[in-house]
Length: 343
Ligand SMILES: [Zn+2]
Ligand SMILES: [Zn+2]
Image (cartoon, rainbow, N blue to C red):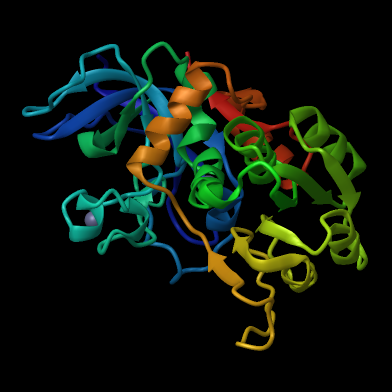
């Protein structure tokens, strides 16, 4: 192994990220050195790159938080993994030992904050990444390049859908608002794992066509009349609405489309607000903001991907070309996830 590697780093707020030659870290006890294979680019990366000082943990650090690769070196006391194994790396930096983590509720970890791989700690836009073994998920036969988007986008969506599966029995209806990225995964999970009828809402007919291909039964262009259309087509409202947009209009539509006992599950960070109160929403209805995912979620979506039960659409960029990938993401010209590959 060479002593140094290239890493795409943010060195100072307000300055563009840059390639730096830095030492390859060595794994200590409980740690794993992973040779990167695939790194998904995310809107959070753009928000970090454009951020003023004071919000995110301070640089310098290597960005990239949707990471997968192969184990290059194991630290002491790491069980269950071997050199060469493919691993997915959780983008959530849970502690693994608090009461919430002990119950498998890693998304609610008492010690979780903004920091993680690619945010404060060095991330995956480098030839190697040093991780804690507790954040590694075995991929088995799944190609790490294909797996990369599972570390964040696909997992957030899965966590939202899984929590509602007990009520999404045959005869029920689930609405997915915003069927790009996360929402396209939600449609697939609902189609694969539940008997619910799926209604997709989006402003783009192209994305709605794709949602139909992935399993949506009804699709509507988002407008002010969607709630009524949903209430009509479901004889009284949907059992669950998953909102991956989160603006005031989409939240209002979602809440108005709920049946009695329905749930509005919001993962979109659109910053919208709606009034909530005992008399303001459908009887027995609920509002849930969902954020993050846990270790069981990651293992489960890896299984789904390995068995070819979900599609992970991606456009690949070489590591040298990472800036083209970020630009394409910003210009919304990427098909599926933008994934940086390494050789
Ligand atoms: Zn992300
Ligand atoms: Zn914890």
